[in-house]
Image (cartoon, rainbow, N blue to C red; front, top):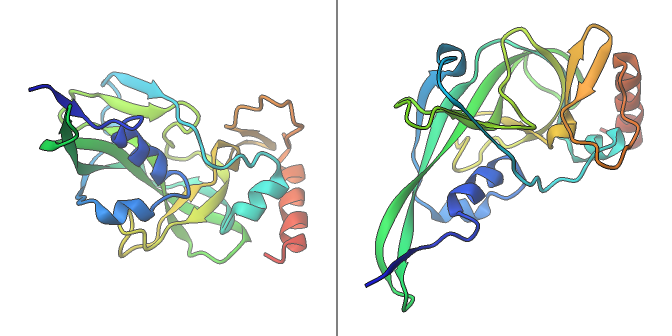
Length: 227
């Protein structure tokens, strides 16, 4: 009898996209388990598998990002990302629509510790954790899996981050404080007085390139939205 594994654009991929977007409710009904693995800085010799995802948020401009953010901070990477694996049991269907078996799907996520240097929106402690999809396979079989427009953070890098609070999420943060970026446009790398967004600006919208300009826009729109 022919077996068909339910894909729906690959449920494992959906779980990955869900974690960096605004879609967590369906995961409450799945049996998941999380385990801490190794820091990405310890496995530089493993092969890198880059992929891309479709982000739910279309925010690109600073006002749009501020509106969708719970907090906006300037922060420095304090520790290398630590990888977790989320394992989900998925059904296998036969050609008649009957569940005949199950398979285990594993998706990697990484949490990075940041030292908060300045807070523009919201209130946060001096150290926060930021989650991103991708990570290191401790077995070495899958190497390093990384999202092209949200690459792993490196110790010492500084960013201005537009973040969504996902603390209390039943899968990723049931008993801790955790954040994720709104989307790649909400991740600005700081290099001296220059800033650059990780978003792919296909509409040629004028984005801030100077840290002073970026900070001024954040403060302006935060005041407008009473944040």
